[in-house]
Amino acid sequence: MGYLEQGQWHIGNLLPSKQGAFVRKPSQFRDWITTDGTSAFPAEADRYHLYLSYACPWSCRPLIVLALKKLMPIVTLGIVDPLMLEHGWMFTDNPGCGADHLNHCDYLYELYLKANPQYDGRVTVPVLWDKKAQTIVSNESADIMRMFNEVFNEYTDVSLDLYPEHLHADIDAINDEIYRGVNNAVYRCGFATSQAAYEAAYQMLFKTLDDLEQRLSYNRYLLGDQLTEADWRLFVTLVRFDPVYYSHFKCNMKQIRDYENLQNYLRELYQIPGIADTVRLDHIKMHYYRSHTELNPTGIVPVGPVVTWLAPHNRSLRA
Image (cartoon, rainbow, N blue to C red; front, side, top):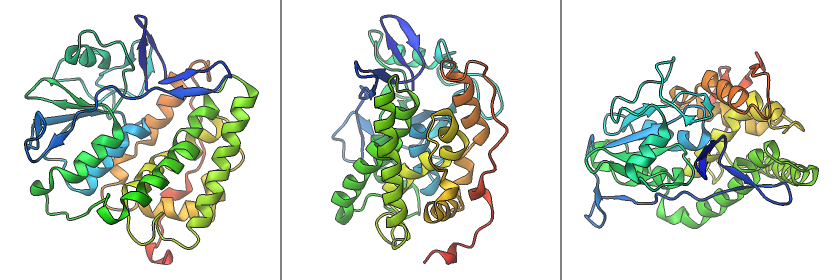
């Protein structure tokens, strides 16, 4: 979230089209950590640093993989402030975040310029930083997820594989459906500048949620009994839906609490060990309601709603 255009910092990483729809620009740093020496970035413990925001769904994707694979001691973390104002993501000592003691930046854009002094694109989280080479490896969350799933297995006793070979095609297909119909659709609703663009995104969003509700009536997870990266790519949007997207982005046909299967699915995923620590509702609500001044000029952060998936739940009820 955040981009640089003609020397000016802007909120958001979505650009308006002539039709009032918003288009997400692609990430520009797409290198890869490898275990076989085929890249400039070898898999080494304590070499890499992940910059992220608890508020941002995209940057919480790789954080979840680190938690599930118990790789927190291998990759260090830098947490930006939930507020993103005129200079973009910033480093502060506010609760749940911290100063950038690694590169001594005040703003995330300084890190991008350190990696490439001519950089003029979006400044987004997450950022995977190589402490030895002093550069950005990747700022694409989907790639970083897969790297963390694959390349540090020698440093953990967790055998979990979130992208198993026999499910590649199925995972890729549902990832695409979820991205278009949920992950990105909420932003297309929230940042639409025409009624037609908003309604098109709105209809796609709730058609996809209805389809997922039906899928979860016969599947425990999106692809059956095995958790995959697809579940976590959906999870990061679902946890933000009722507190933020329903009202702030005008996605107000239903809340997740109105879907029996999606709500129980979300509750179950949240209770998996390590996941609750990746969810900071205070950062999430602070970011959206106070950073998007064009959508919420007063900056008032709603007190509610009651988040039902935080309630205790017996996972065995979902067979």
